Image 1 (tube, helix red, strand yellow):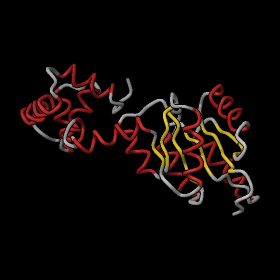
Image 2 (spheres, helix red, strand yellow; image 1 turned 30 degrees about the horizontal axis):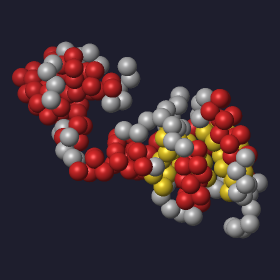
Image 3 (cartoon, rainbow, N blue to C red; image 1 turned 180 degrees about the horizontal axis):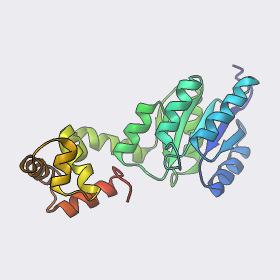
Image 4 (tube, rainbow, N blue to C red; image 1 turned 120 degrees about the vertical axis):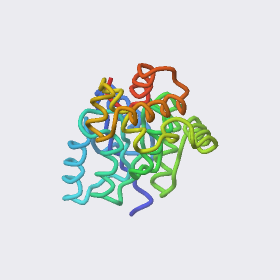
Length: 219
């Protein structure tokens, strides 16, 4: 890899205005060159495969998280498996700990919020190109708080309690949940009670709203 050529960057975002803005910004950055874009993960992988066929893969992919089809984390994992030499930097509006962990576990080497200074994106691109991890300050703070209090929120629930929570959020009754999970209604009530206690909620309605807000189920 030549150190003299610009860092080749590919943009994945389902909003055209975002792609246009990032492309214009990248064109104006001396050591960076935009080399393509896609509106979703499947299209991105197809175009990266085509670039690989002519030995023109990008060095870094800028990846949105919330898109139709496979989300940003799933798309990151697909790209990293198909083209392990390509680094992925997440650029998104969402900075909650769950999404950050999912993106990093999928193979992202950077995570930047869209409301960060544009220079932050360049720093993340350069860091990814060097093989380093770059998280902006807001994201670092989120991860630090999640480590300090690892047993709050969804992490405090057992696997069965999570199952019950998801089914409650889908509007299922205790009887339905018991049938789906092959457990009795009383056991469902016990698990739901534990969920409410651990999440400091007062009702199954609050639990359902909490699950939607945290992105565990579609609204």
